[in-house]
Length: 265
Image (cartoon, rainbow, N blue to C red; front, side, top):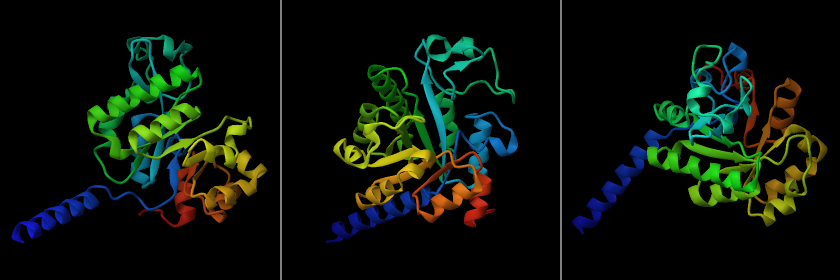
């Protein structure tokens, strides 16, 4: 009996420590490529991540590529100074610093910074615009690094490739959001297809929700997590707040936090 009580106490203490360690901000604001725009910081830089944390965003999104020498780097565009990232060595990329003097960060460097705090999640966009094979390879490499660093509890995922999203959802146990395609409506984006593919979260460009407001009710009935990007206009912020989205991704997180009443929290 004493042993049973001791086990219960250990479990209770463990749960309490876990709850204290991860105390995510209770808002719906996701900083798009970090909180970069309002202070003129480089997108996806460590500085833009730190600003998202300072503001108190629930999450901050970043984009990850793989280089020719298998380095995972945090950067949005496919090219850096006209160098195609997937065809370049990391040493060649860092010859050209970001505008604040930072070099392009590796995913390991980014995760090291992320793990210094326990309030803001990192939302990793797997840049999967090449092929199914490339998408899965990149997804697996990202998961490998995250697991090696013990950083999985800080991370969630985005992807535009169905197979990659399914892999991330199954292999990590973390939320993996399907992005669909920029400006182009795909059959895979419809609620019935999302359900058929076993996708549990979507993050579509705003134009698709405006064109199909009925999708919102359909997704909610199926308990699909709803995010939207990139919501920068004030009237658009109001629209997505009114429709009770689970998350809103924006280049103006400070503005959205203020609108939601979370400023200076």
